[in-house]
Length: 256
Length: 288
Image (cartoon, rainbow over all chains, first blue to last red; front, side, top):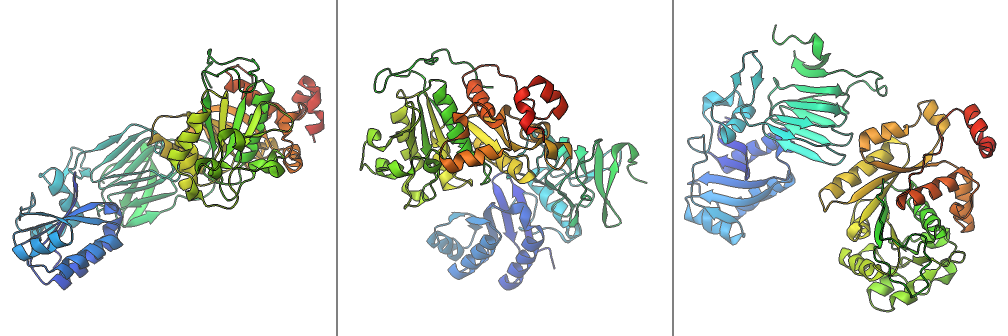
């Protein structure tokens, strides 16, 4: 089952909780997850909660190197087991008593939520009310929006678990990676990934949408190459039937 | 544009070792991408400022790959270099090489045989601090890239001149540099568009200045046209800015004057050839 690991982006970094089950299976599962969604957490500092699980030094080291492969750094191990805490201390990691991560009962998430993994996992860390639809029926991640009021330049990355709003241009070579929607009040020329934890209802909108690449959930599209258009108008990129569509804002009808 | 600095010794000729300059400006020339003309720009602006009566020190920070000395034709006069200075083998006066043609232009050359790590950002701050008060301008020529050498080059800078050619990869390089500099202390950054080719802009095969500024969003301080004279002058070790004739030389002189705070109109590089002919006779030879 998929429900024995939980990963959340929090303000302090990435919280990973291991539930019940064999460590081999859990780490394989974590690896699969990071392979799919790891880009979002890259560079993150990790707190690993293992409940009462006994982990030896080599077990922790294994998790550490798995995370390192995905450019994440294990900093804290949280456990109620003395052996685990001692092993973590030996490795020079921070330790904490077994705190139950907010929004989950046992470090895992409920089977009911498993169907909607990415979204729920993000939710829990920021706002507990879960996915909701607003008046127009647009599904949104509940995490707070991040408003970036400047030009995002080549080499810069904006990464946020909720919706990202950029008031300014996103230049070629820049990246915006969001758990929710991406809204650019300006020219979007860089790479953008909306719904990066699997939320295919996320959208990308921009006053001038000519990015190198648009990703929504696990889909990728390249707008046709052919140089810059002479005219520009607001557009929206969204997913339908497992494809990304880009349409003029004026042509958009939310929900059929 | 650069603001006027009233305290600057305007046009005065400080005699060597005499007058202290109160407001030395340390300006790093950088670009991210290589091969866009950083060193050529440094040499020519250095020459242009010196011809306006400013005392200028140009520093080559491309350690291991020095070439500013060759563009100035000073390669055979190097005794000590930046690394010697930093490591205490010589004094500043010994390391500085006076230009062959301009008394107020000095070169602090890079070491040829050492790696970039021979100099640290703190070393650069120390060297530049030593030069404060001794000259009007310190122009620091940065190596390509955004790693160690670049960090050294910008460590002591008051301002940056960013050099971009009208190509996507060059613009992105400058954009990357601007992003990195944003994260540090605020630096005044101005753009020099180098090697502009009007014909390619007209055929939409290269960026126009407007398109570059739209992306980079910084002040434009000069546009230098693509010109063979520049390369020929480099090969001779006499930067083109020693002359007055060519458009490229004028472009460098204009940049220098704008750096001093003068309002100088931009050269009509993009206007139709026929119109230019009427206005500027000397443009005729470029009409082809």
